Amino acid sequence: MPFFRVVLRRSAIGLHRRKGRILDALGFRRRADTVHHEITPKVAGMIFKVKELVEVHKVEEKKTRAQVRLERKPDPGYAVLRGTSQG
Image (tube, rainbow, N blue to C red; front, side, top):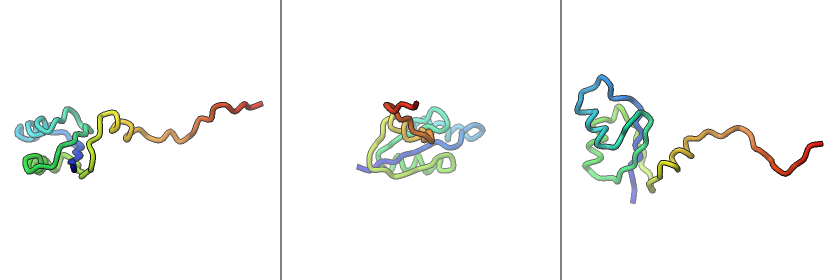
C-alpha cells in the first residue's frame, strides 16, 4: 500500500492560523519532522493546502522514527577496523 512521506520544510509562524491547524492535523510538531500517511483524498487535500511548507514523496512502505533517523545520519567518512595491530 503506498504512503505519502511528508517533511515539514518551513515553519507556519506568521501564516494564517488555519495552516497551523492543518499542520497539527497532519501530525507535525516542529520543522524537519517527517510523517507518513496513507494516500487518501482527505490527506491529499490537507497537503495541498500547505504545499509551500512541505516536501512530499510517494513511498511504498511506512518507516519508523528510528529508520528515518538512521536515514538522515551522515556517513562518517571513515571506517574503523578492529583486530589489526600496528607495531
